[in-house]
Length: 275
Image (cartoon, rainbow, N blue to C red; front, top):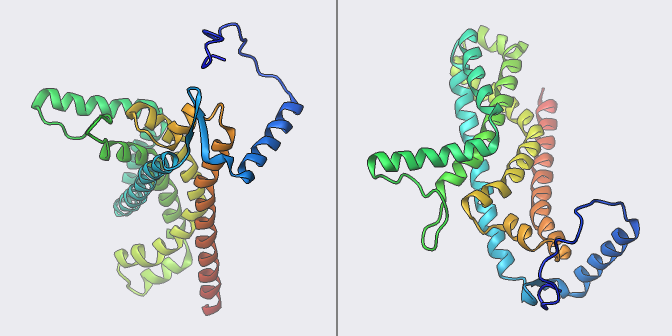
């Protein structure tokens, strides 16, 4: 009605949440019908229907590049920091873990704004722009969003790996390896690392969901036209588009996690058979 100039605003509506089972069922049926009759390839915005593709696909690939890039960085950083931490005595490890505990407790939006302000401060002091702090017409913010999105997941991965490494460190096979004179670095890199990575996978689904939850806030602050912003702008009146977008995000992740879990189970069974 606003698009047709019948209403100038919707201030007369109350912001209330009610339980309406009939409306829910009707909307669910409508969404299923649209998904299967082919009408989902258009979305409504500003009084007209526009093709859903390639706009949705471009937003999807942009967001997934940030998400996958940040997860790769977080895994690499978490593994590297874990190895460095395990080389120190236990008393020193406690101080290192305490430092990362402080970083973990910081609010996500505070970390993003602090990183942007840091880049701006360096630019004002040195006239050197380290990274783009937002997305413009010709400039794309790439490194800084990936770094920020990987920061807290990297801390979580580091925390899980350190706990797993310390648990594995007390196992009998580690004492046996030390008794045989095997180098400490070899024990960490081969034996402990292999078993700890299996344990990490059990927590990685949570890390993935955590990074995905921060993706919307990241796209808002950096003005990135990704799939989360696409849903945020058009999802209210295009529920079928939201359903399709969620399938595009979670279905590949489900297949990937299932395949990795299958390989881990086969590898674990093979190791137990060898023993």
